[in-house]
Every structure is written in structure tokens, then in C-alpha cells.
Image (cartoon, rainbow over all chains, first blue to last red; front, side, top):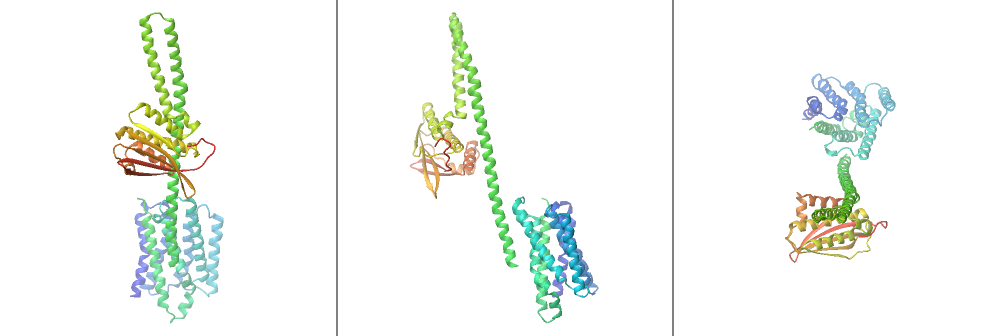
Length: 212
Length: 249
């Protein structure tokens, strides 16, 4: 049953990408801001399914690379959505710092691991900070006529809910994995639920991005 | 996370409320600009009629008077007199149009006096008896507000004249204090055909009612309608912002 849910969650990741690719001609320009992240979720899900379900091999490398690409994909959205607030120089420093932290994570934990706690914290704090900046911009400009019909609002809500929800989960990932009898399934179930929520809201975001 | 989800919902509701308020304010500002432009245009046309057309007509009348004095031919003088009568009528008509477009009394004595003057003229011309009473002559009103109030009264009484078959119309101005704010009440009652102006306004088709609604919106005013003793009672409630620089009521 758990395997079924896990596969379902991974498959769910393809839906936003599929809708994006099928309706790309009808999508509003701001929907394209989220394409790198949608692509990462979709392609990441594909490889996860391939490696863990079909080939039954260790996907730790995949998770590490996924984490490395996660922030740039999210940052691309905010860079475009908050333009010209986030300058090029700042963006380069911001991403470089993240890559550095990711490398430190890899070195500190003696090679590739399931989670990179420092990088994860960096992502979560970035998501919170950039989301606040986005909401502030929205409330200052008042350019979006109906917020709950805005594709960007759904995207920001999706990542904000997901990363806030998984904050402690990822921080404790190593401990949870090492202590195998410590309600690992419960933690895993929370992760799966949040992941499903993320992918569902992302699907809504793409759907709302269609220009009527 | 639940708290965050609730916060996001709250943000959406808050945003939409503020957006609605902004839109209402923008609509009001646009309406105000349109009405002000209309007022400016009325003033311009009124001045052009008064200073331009009336001036030319006066000069024609004078020439005709001279011609009549100098000419001894009775037949010709009869024709000249006919032309002179026509010019007199044109002059009178121009004066009336100019006055209706922008009563001069509005700037000197204020909206209430302009309303009184307007109702006096209606009394002289028609079969309907108009009465006017002002229980707040000391109330100071911004000249813009006074102008809009005058137009509202004018529009309402025009409708009564056209459609109601009334014989008696009363216009009353009085003020009420509501939560430290002064609200001017303009009560217009008539004994004509019963007509719920409030309901009609919700399904507006006529230009007159549309104009009243637009002016009320700009003034942030309200409208009440009731039937008492088989009479229509329309009450316009206009919040008044005091301005000592302009003549009252």
C-alpha cells in the first residue's frame, strides 16, 4: 500500500509538467517563470521512479543533485516575478553561496547523503524570505485583480507550504534513517502527504496560468 | 503548516477586500472627474452663450431700434418690429439656457439658493406648485457638493414634471448629525403617481436616474424612498464636509 502511494506521488509530479507542455501555447508569460521547478519535479520524479522502483538501485546521488538544483529553480521564479528587485550580481552571489553550502554539506557528512541539512535550511529560509518579498510586492502594486486566480499565488503558496512543512523533517532525515524504529513510516507519510499537496497545488498553478 | 495555510487564506481575503475598496475609490474618482468635466463644460457654454450670443443679439436689437426710429415707412416698421420681437425671444431663450446650464446664483449664494431660485421659476411656468423650505441655512457646503445637490434636485423635479402628474411638490433641506458627521437630508415629496425611485435605480435605463446615481456615488450619499399618505417621499442623504470658503447650503 505504501509503495503504491509512493509511486502515485512520483507520478503526480509528472502532471504539472505534462499540463505545462500540452498547454504551453495558451499559458501566460508568468507561468513560464515556474518552468524550471516544474521540470525539476517532473524529471526528478521520473529518475526516482526509474532508479528506486524499476532498477532498485540507490538513489542517494539523485537526491543530492535534486537538492543542488532545487534552489536555482525556485530562485529563477522569484528572480522573474520580483524583477528588477533581485539584481544579477546579488543573484550570482546568492546561488554561489548556496552551491558552497551544498559542497560543505557533502564534505561534512563524508560524501553524498540522503539529505543536505545546511542546504535544506538555506532553501527553506530563501523560500520564506522570497515569498514575503513577493507578497509585499503584490500588496504594494495591487496589479493582480483576483489573487486566488493568480498562477503565481498558487506557486508561491505551494512551495511555501511544502518547504515550511518539511522543514523539521529534512533536518531530522539522517537521524530518522539511522534510528530505524523511530516511527520512520509516520515521518515518511508526512513527507509523502506534503509532496502530494505540493504537486496538486502546482497542477492548479499551471491550470490557472492558461489564458482564457 | 495549518497556521500557514489559514494565513494564506486570510491574505487572499484581505487582498480582495482591499482590491475592491481600491476599485470603488477609482470608480468614484473617475466619476468625479467626468462630472467635474461636465460642470466645466457647462460653465464654458453658459459663459459663451451669455457673453457671445447674447451680446450679438443685443447689438442686433439696438440696430433694429435705430432702424425703426429712422424709418418712416409703416410697413417696413411692422416687419422690423416682428424681427425685434423674434430677437427678444431669442435673447430670453439664450438667457434661460445659460441660466439652466450654470445658475449665476450658485457661485454667489450657494446651492440652496440656486435650488430655491430654480423652484421659483418652475412655479412661474407650470401648473405644479413647488414649495421649498430650508431648515439649515447656516450649513456650509463645499461649492462642488452644492452644485451636485442642485443637479440632483433638478433631475428629480424634471422627472416629476415629466411623468408623475403631480400637483404639489415639496423640497425640504435639513441636516442630521450622525456619529459626529453632518448629513444633509434633501426630502422631495410629491402627490403624483407612486414611483419607487430606489427600485428603478437598481434597474436603471434612463439617463436622468443614471445621472442621479453617479452624483450620489461621487458625494458618497445615499437614497431612501417611502410612501406616506399616498405620496412619494425621496430622501437624499449627503455627508457634508465643511468648507468656510464657499457660500452655504
